[in-house]
Image 1 (cartoon, each protein chain N blue to C red):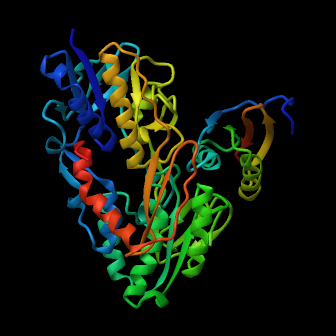
Image 2: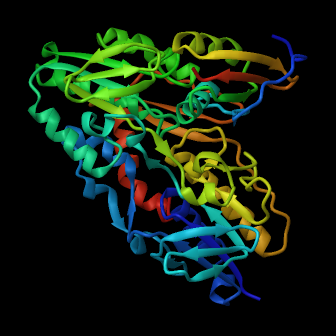
Length: 380
Length: 82
């Protein structure tokens, strides 16, 4: 009997998993014993870390886009359908055209979506670099603005790539200095809790560096409303900041599919953080941003989780016990300017320990971004 | 507050046990954002810092910490949105 593995979502996690399965289960797929189907509405695979560089003119959005078919092994069946509903009890998916598709194993890899409209005025008054259009518009604004107050506000949590707000702040500071324009600007970084990053070790590392760059910090700042006309952002805690350019990390949301199927709150799937199995449902896994593991919503975490689930699924279709487990491993490069970066690696047991930034680490990050297309294919 | 006090009615629960990043307080704030004024959100956290951080944030944001209960391997913190 053919075993059907369905993956919903063709981002980093879904793509790496599909390629892992194609590699691991080559014989079974070729024999018709296993079918791997990747559902992704769009036809492109998008590598989001490219967007951080777009506002500074160092990358184009197109650099982060390739046809999904070119990135995914030909043994994987790709369907560009919108998955409208998941029924984990009956083990089937409903597609937008009302077609029903049954599965034996399901992996939710639906990622994160932006929800800036959750904060009044943010859509009209704020810029961001968490999407292609947003990153382009921010690039245009940075090229136009001559002086004033730039506010980087982490509005939404959880959000993709927890390092990115600090990275952007350090980069815009350095970018302005390189052009001799830093004196014309005040920079403020705001964060929702009492330190500058959710992770204590990274916060301790970042705080003196922000101070040394003369970047003002507002902690315990949870944006409640933005007034685009007045150029102000107000927090739940009663602080109001004037801005000339507001760069926000917008609120994020998970997939409606997850919420509707009762797989978890807010569109994030409740999972066992080691096995990545959905809580309360058989034969359902979640990986990447969609999985509520407690680790950051980062591409590296999605990649490592895909490896684990790939091994588990391969064992299961061969009727062997699934033994692979996820240890929380996450790696992040953190840009600290236009030419320097540091690096952290951590897991459920070991906290991150960011080191002194170096030029070599910056080039390592850029090299990794270029080689991403090989890692997504499972070649690196 | 003690573990023996009667728990308040919860309108939403945030299970942030094992949350390493961005952390339990950030998870709580995200939920507080989405509920109506007057709603009670319960945070489950195994990070002891949550007991002080949540109180500090709630004081600043004008929300009420109704109860902090020690459940042995985690804390159960009730917060009412004001």
